[in-house]
Image: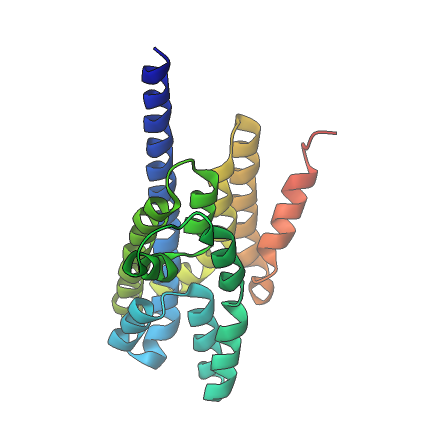
Length: 225
């Protein structure tokens, strides 16, 4: 009986990981669309897609797109990418003790590990290599696919480009939905998303700071005392 119970627990754990990976992948796909919309006009569709395939780092790619659009030098782009990705050294060091496999699979883990796959691996009782490779593959496909959609669709529609850019800060709140455990948390997440979208349109010049303001406001309202 105990063995059957343990098997059921493992299956539930695997199902939860798959659901979390796919739900997060949807958000990552929209991030990819936004990147394609932003980088496509300056880089060209195929260069933007190739960047997502080879670099596979949203923060570095967005920083590079912004710097290059402002005429930044190659040194500035490389420095920004190195600073933004320095956290991966720490994440890799934390995960290293749970990765006991050959060099090829370690290389795959190193390439596919990002904040989301790392978080799933640390929260799961399953082997870290399987979690990172499985979830990371989903995230990689959705990121590249989203980039492709953004570059081709955004280049022919100003309305699509504006809508995709406006949704970018809302996704920061949307990713928090993965950790919601009760109805109150779900209500606060929905309120934060709607509030963020409204503030983005009301104050477009301050959209980078809107998710932080919305998250703080919603966290203060209705929290446990």
